[in-house]
Image (cartoon, rainbow, N blue to C red):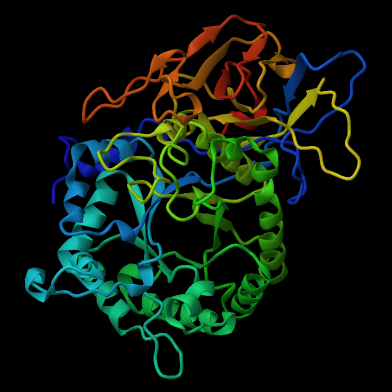
Length: 528
């Protein structure tokens, strides 16, 4: 099946405009440290108006996956003819802009999907209803379209198999999964695998629970199946895709890790910040909300490192809000504060991959809307891919003077992260550094680059809302120029504003921005 482009599929990954990953660069050396910006008191700097910033350019504090920022397609978007959109040239162009990345096909409907390799799937469908929509996905041609979309976009497909097909003894019934594996192997599809989605919710979904020990046995069974099929004998397997690490979920994870911790290539979990039914724009400006993820990271890392020290951890299904999000909120410019801080925080604390839920049209948490128009978080993600590399650097800050409040942790409204600039961005020589900054203050902040960054030319990428809607806007501007696709096959050029050497960075209120510090010749960034 040809890609919707004149470019041969094999070349698409090479053409991806900004394959870089992210690395966040705060100083926190411990996994549970909530401070995105360590503060060093310096008597020579007075007041709040000027911040001195330096970066440790000798060694990275973390190195994350090249596919750090990855994407998810939720099976809930299934409807009659839904897969036809995957042949859209515009959609492939948008997805290709975020390559390289994983494309995870999973969500609440994962454990209700079944695969049917039939020649005429139309005859196997019933009338409209939940089963009708699912069967529109299940036939082999639908899997072909899904894989072709991922391949044409330069994305690696991760497919979550149905884990709720159970035998009378509650073990996993793998017969349907085996049919799907054999079919995809016959097509030589390069796919990684998962089993189920949020198993901690199975009792709610089906009135039938699966404990951690049994889930671990199920994963071992799936690994055995993969090893029997030559195409997938060395395929990657990820799991257990648990929800928020509450007490019962931690118990499930511990049971799983005891049995199958060494079976999976990365341990995966999921997180949402806000109840979508009550979210308001000011929620996205709350530092307390931005910091809730730190505690959860610490809980997951504690369990994983107890049973399989050093095992990679992924955060999947991450989104601003639950319940599908809210129009003009979770799909607005304001939601970007949460998204960019999530990327920075996860990278700085060593989470290897973060999977954004969802790439397309799932409620209002998506990057691209149902008309295939990129939303603010898409442009934010595109900038991240173009400018941020996988090496995370530590920062040193002085001049932020605050009055401590006894009995509570002080959380900064100015978030600063640093990485080596993406090696794939040929506009910058190796050794350059990219800063990304979130200013949640309602006043501008000034940053003076010091130490190894002093006196260097800086390229500014300032992302602001466009239009009278302000923080609610679904349109953005880069350095004062509105961002929009040139045509269905072309993303706009992301033009920086060059700042003169030694100039103080002025960060406008309630904005997100990237700054590439050129020609630093940072030792940590010279080599891949």
